[in-house]
Image (tube, rainbow, N blue to C red; front, side, top):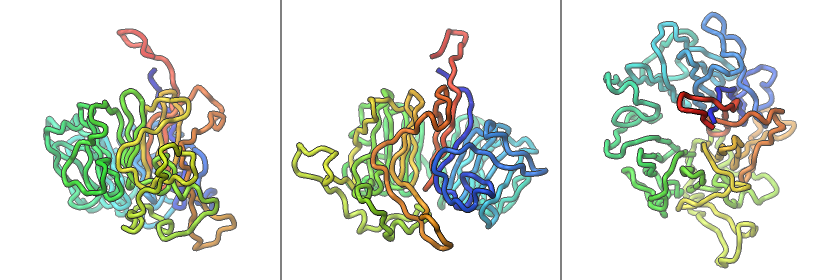
Amino acid sequence: MVAMPGRWFGFGFNQFGQVVNRRECEGDGKVLGPVAVTVHSLGKAGQWPSGGSCLRKLSPAWSHTACLADDGSIYVFGFVDGRPWQQMCISNQANQGCVDILSSEKYLFMLWQDRVECRDIQNLSTGEVKGDLIWVKQLKEGEKQCTALPLIPDGYVTTTLPFYKPLAPQLCTRKLALGSEHAVLLSTGFTVYSWGSGRHGQLGHGGVEDETEPRIVEALHGLAMAEIAAGGWHSVCSSVSGDLYVWGWNESGQLGLPAKSCSEEKHRKTPQQKRLSGEVSPSLSEANNTVIKSANKITGLGDSNVFISIQAFPALLDLPEELEVSKVSCGSRHSAAVTREGKLFTWGWVWELAQNQQLGDLLSYHGHCFPQCFPEHTFGDSSLSWGSLFQAATNTWAERLFSRFLCSNSGCVG
């Protein structure tokens, strides 16, 4: 079955207009359910793609979202040019052919036909690409068709200095996912590697030690993996057969495993919840609260006394009805998966604004420890299914696809 291009929907933290950039939503601060990407006209610099149908990719950061359109234009909305609730369009007037983007809170990486550029996103303005060039890497002729950010020939880009890091060619990299302090790699042989900080078990090697070089995740070795994702301090992958594996930090239920924070009825306001960006590493004292579980092997996950803070080995996570997974994605402390049937599941960190909030009020949060499926009646069309996923620190983007059967010269694909 081939999915026709559809529309992008976003939900989550919206304090800066990075999900729904409409003035009538300015006081909401959050979007609780999927809302279609629609933004007003940007004037002479270009028109926002109607309904998001022309968007090729989204790259969300904490306070803004960058989008790449089919024509190579780049759209940014949210906290832009030093102000919230702004919109910007970098048009493709010179037909330079931007083919991919990667956005962080400070930098925007743009992959062109012959180079990769890094620019300060707050110094960009509507129109053609201008502003100080922070970093650039020229691509050779044979490298142009084999690059997808963050991967680039012979290495990958990161959103912190020095921006470029090499990868050994023998890794034969297929996909790469970057977390806050670690990286997860999928090789062309469907093998998973990880490296970086391991103090929250996010590397999946069974401990909390750091790794300076890519190391095979032994617990998954021999299993063919198809998709990978890296959150702030956790990792998720799915196998070719559709099984879902999770490991790392589970403080907010981002692994879909029992978490202490999810079991408490009242919302707490602790120091880690006051880090509104979701990009500040947890303290070592938090990391030391590793695993709390019953010594009785008969005790199941439904036992209220069983809490998992750190899962240092990959754990198999079952979805309801034994559904098989086709796509995975991670935010800072939440996760999402799309099944082969097109169902969207999310779990982990949930931001909320207190009722009758006043200026300066802090956000509170709670967690959904177990995967929850979005009901089809939310959209009123069960013929639609979910496709691609992108997640930021506190919000989620998913593409709603029009699923139809298509035929090729060799027969029907179903």
